[in-house]
Image (cartoon, rainbow, N blue to C red; front, side, top):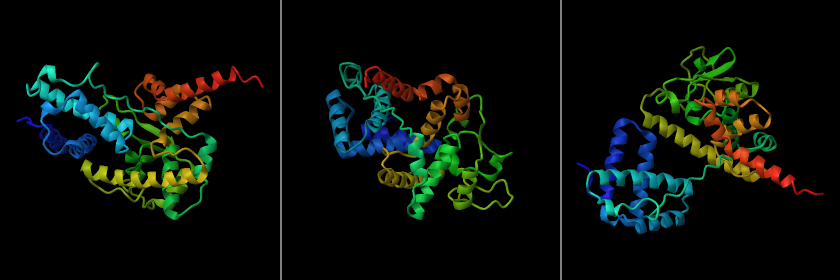
Length: 308
């Protein structure tokens, strides 16, 4: 039976996501529920969820330091639960709190920080503790490996190395795309050095993982916890590096956007960039690089009044 309160309805979603192995949705809805309980307690009736209530929740989350992107995720999850309640007759149409003139979900910040070549050089030549240098190298490996995400990178095996290239399929698209696209990234000397420094030795077995964090499991929650832990530690290290070398704060995800943007700035054909990122269409790549295009337009506009 559908939950009679907002809390029980969200918990029902969480339980279903866990049962189905939908890891990202599970954690998103769980975080949403925890935030709601801090704001309004453990038993919120659907009748309380008005546009004003949502606006106050929004303000509460901002005061907690949540980003606009995080609030966007939480409110979309909440909207999905409210939509279910409306379909099930628990919430009357006149009570529906989302939409124009009511509460409108803030747009997430789509800015994806891409480092310049000069900034990347500062990052990868940074010297610090062994731990910080290890995570610096993981970021650099991700950048060199076509911007591979940490989920895919940490679970690479020696069998993924074929004819001097790393060949892999993005886990993000492996179960959602009709056409499975294999990505190939040249295994550079820098990448080989990183594997040698921080990875498992090559024992001749194709199933051996390149790096030491992964382990044999089909449980997506176990995999997710490994990736989340390493990503969190890496982001802490990257923040230290950014402050030390004087570049804007960046995260593991910036490796992917930096890879694409550096190639774009060098004049690389967008079709090649699209293929190397594993995008299913050029349109996705063009949208992905939209922030770079805007940066270019702003820079070019400034040239028009640079009279000196």
